[in-house]
Amino acid sequence: MLYFTSDLNTYHIEASDGQMGKVQDLYFDDEKWVVRYAVLDVRKWLPTRRILLSPASFTSIDTENQQINVKHDKETVRNSPSIPADATFSSDLEMALTGYYGWSRYWLGGLLWGVEDMPGVNIDDRELEAQEMSNEPQHNLRSEQETGTFRVHANDGKIGEVSDIIIDDIYWKVRCVVVSEARLPAEDKFMPVNAEQIQSVDWLEGDIYINSDLEDLNNRTRYESKEALLKAL
Image (cartoon, rainbow, N blue to C red; front, top):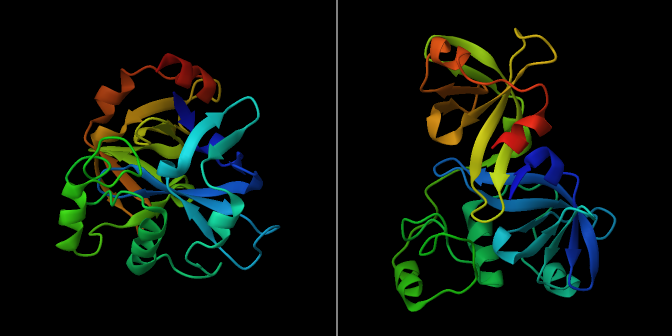
């Protein structure tokens, strides 16, 4: 199933023994554009901590109740490596988290999730052997919320701005960037851009460049709402 990240950012996180908080942000890596962590808002429960969970810990997404169910209980999450609320998420912290929860080290093996295509927690002998020889992750994690303010450019001009991001719940891969085109009428302004078309990103300046010309883009279907766009995919 496909989801807008803006919708998931309103969902609650439900542990096996009760609610922990809400999704605050989603971090994806800038190589394969796959969501690696949900950042939780747990201020009411652990006010000085920042909690990150991999999709490998998710058991289901409950759209009716707007919650993501996870396999851990609260005590397991409470005892996870401590990340202060104002700390930068470093490679050392990421290695500590994957070790604590037993998550697959997705940067190994070449597939979307390391030695597997889908997120999981079963580390096999192949990966353990690779981990012994591995260095720290050679990628950067990017904030979905920050990316949601980026400008989008074709080869020959600006298209518009990021309005939303669409991901799937099987691989947790970014499938589309939804572009809002300010130059179009308000009732017909949303256009999907496949993530595979992204040529480069200036993360510092906030610009996404796609491998297409404005003339080609003008022939694409636009949608009057994001919901209509999602139904068409």
